[in-house]
Structures are given as structure tokens and as C-alpha cells.
Amino acid sequence: MTQRADPEEMNLVAESPQELLEQNEIKRRRDPLGRAIQLLIHMVDSGEEAYGVRELGTRLGASASTAHRLLGELEQLGMVDRTPSGTYRIGLEFLRIARTSIAQFPLHDKANDVLRELTRRSEETSFLSVYSSQRQQMMFTLSVESAHPLRYVLQLNKWLSVHTGASGLAILAFLPDEDRREILEKQLGTSADICDDTQRLTERLTEIKRQGYASSRAERIAGAVAVAAPVFGPSGEVFGDVGVTIPESRFNETDEPVLAGLVIHSAEILTASMGGTAPKS
Image (cartoon, rainbow, N blue to C red; front, side):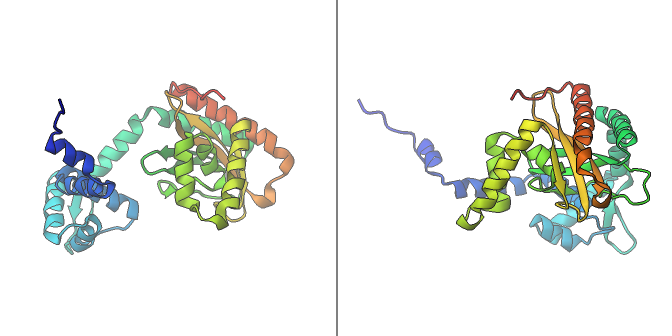
């Protein structure tokens, strides 16, 4: 006896990836909470002092009236403030929540202590970065500057790619193979003329994973050398990394093993403080 398929199940199977994406987009647009969060993320990430209603509506892919309604609800909660000119900026309540969250973040105080010690011992600027698997990007969240008059000041809280610089490569090398391949394809492409670049980078990542740290010269910042080692979370996932950045004019290649030892030790301390575990080779 032949069993007839349910028409609804047939429709689900027949849906193309494009149709599924369109359905997800429709659901997202109907989600006021999600849209409000997207609006706040844009206001924080773009770094402007104030934003017009139409600008934010365009960013959301929504009408000005929809953006105005969302902003009104956020204003009532204190998450945004309206300026005398009618534009909007991040509100005091949002800033209070952000400051409180940072203060309560268990790694924050420990990371401060670790970076201070790393800077004291290396006499160079140290940093902590975190990795977002959703964005597939990293961000410098904390740094302790060296006492040298000539030093690099890192820009904090800005999302950056992970396919370049020691700070990015120390993360990329320890990501799952599938994630790493996806990032390389997005950043470098898959055309034949860049296959050699991809191969060289893949070989470099293998070496970074073997030695436990990454080093770079003038890759993310012109004239800067960096050495970084990964920090791992409780499930062995990459949380971010710890490193130092040095003006190239002050760097001596014979110092790299010492610096590498310092950043690896610092990363191990932070991994342990999170209850993290480094993945087995």
C-alpha cells in the first residue's frame, strides 16, 4: 500500500534556500524586539553622536514611521534620548547598563591584572580581544599601554577581521576547520588567482596552531609588530586572545621567543580563570 505524502510536508521540502532566507527576513521584520536591538547596535557601532529617524529607518530597512515608533519606545525605557534638534542618541540608561555589565563581567578585573603584569614584564602595550562566532570578527576590548613615549594606542570596541595580524590569526588558527574555511572564502574568495594566497595562509595557520601563538609585522597597523596567543572558553572554544604590540623600530627578532612565552602564559591564566580548556592537539 502506497502512503500519500502530506501536502504541507511536500511544500516544506520544496522550499529553496532563497525562500527560507526570505521567510526568515519576514519573521525578523515582524519582531519588534529584534529590530529595536538592531537599531541600538547600529547606534553603538557607527560611532556617531546622534542619528536621524530616516537614517535609522534606512539602516533597518524600515519606514521612517516604524523607526520613529521604535525610537519612541526605546526613549520611554531610557535607552535612547531625543536631542533638541529631533535626532536621537544613546540614552543614559543604556550607558548605565553597559557600565554595570562590564563591571560584573567576571573576566574584566582578572584581565586587567593579567595585562598589567604582561606590560610590566614585556615593557610593551598589551591587549585582550574577544571573538564573535556570529560575526566571525574580533574586537579589542582592553589594553594596557607601555610607558615608552613611542607606542601604539589600540582602538577598542571596533569589530575587525581575523584573517590578518597576530591578534586575528591567533584566533583563526584555533577555530573549527569548517568555520576557518568559511572565513577564508569570505575574506579571500575562491578564484584561482588567490589560491596561492589561501594556501600560504593555511600553512601559516597550521604553524601557529603548532607553536601556540601568532606573530606579525605591519599587517594590521603599519610599523607595528604583534605577538598573540589564544584564550579558550569552558568547552574549548576560542574566546579571544592576549598579546602585545611593539613599534617595529624597537623590535628585535631574538626577543620573540620571550614575548611568545609571556603572552602564552597570560593566555593560560585567563583561560584557567574562565574555567576554560585548551583543545587537545
